[in-house]
Image (cartoon, rainbow over all chains, first blue to last red; front, top):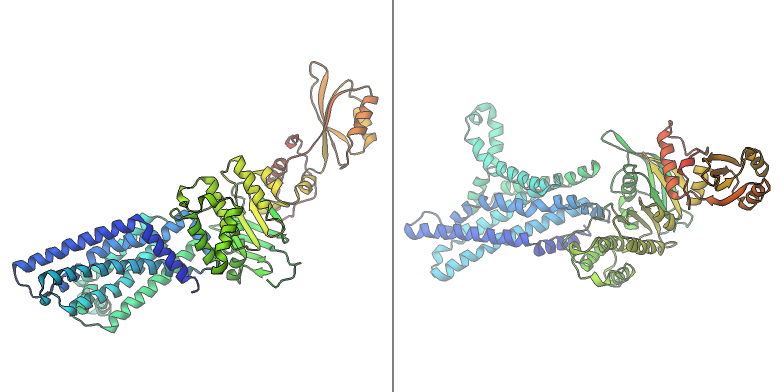
Length: 253
Length: 344
């Protein structure tokens, strides 16, 4: 892990000089700001049962579908397309360090972007002068959920990038995998066949992986170690597959 | 590097690489001693790049062993990576970094101590004549500069072994000269393997040449050795007029192996072109001239021809295509490639 910090700082630097980062950041903040003001509008019309923070995090999946592929699709696919992966891996660095460096930089950017939405709540508190709007529990829970689930989502994006040399393919692949992960679970539980007794084990597994349920738990302030384990083990798996993806491509290139 | 100086810098033994059912490298054996500059020649798809990638530890070999400085590439790839500077085919570089930033990043990855890195970067930029562009973005540099950035990067950490895959591809003659001098300046200090299609290039720069075809080493040695080995004879070209009927016998008196390899039709002045081959290495020109004049033949021109490396390359690769036994070492038997001889 000697070179991890060198690689990480290099990746962060590369992200910071890339115009696409700023485009993605502007689009993300613009979109989230639009959502946030929409939420506030509903509050101004009629009293709501849940806090604005709770409602805000309900839409977490929308930016995830677009941001994660955009942030991660380039990382390994581009290195492979340009051939710079060859110069990179013929220095004394390991594939693990390379993948972790890329992953770390993408995750930090993802978290930074989400953290900047905290400004919305600050503005709300500042100008409404009403502390009731800021319900600290759902806010902290929501950001904790974003931080923990982001580990897995970004990991999936890096994995998609590791198995292709084309950025577009990597992007679509990571979008599909994220879509299946986030929406697929809810979709399966609504089908009839999963309700059969023989499917009980399968149903338990699907219930365990319900990301929307996890979000609700987090925003209610329930942090379940099983859910943490789900994301951590998923992330580890995604990163191991990414490393294998890079190395398998080496063997057959 | 606590190795005895007698250990060869690179030792490749019975190296085989197959992928997707294709044998890219088929039983290659060679060794390179320290401080030597070795040229890798071969037609496209001969296995040059694959061999180089295996040498760097980037690709695993199917079988066989590669040792760099006595260390096995397969079992200690990390040690190897500290000892090589590698410039891949097409010289991939990140587009959106400045030259000095790239050098710094690569230096850190190659474990050059932070203290020494700054002066060392200045030094390699100076060597490669890149000082003027050190703050430019690599993506905006011309091909010649990019190529030199690749070379500067390869020698940055002062590795004992440098492997460069076609370092002069796409350069103009002036830049080729610069790169050639650059590689020449490494002679004795670093072991260098370069591959190239530009044969005069290899001939000038390299101490030794390895010709690879279809995954096999078909010839190796100094350019002069290769000429001898592949052609096995010296040639003389002359233009004579007169009766040449008695010539073979006369030539036999000069040297038993001297014979007429080809002869042309007489032109308007009655002169015809003759090509003579002999196994003798020493100069026969004067004796030949005197003998011919004594025979009352009129001589207009006489010259000794030297096959270029190009001819050697063509002859060696052609021979390997004709070869039936795949694992046979380059046979000592000579082939008659009369047509391939060129005048130098």
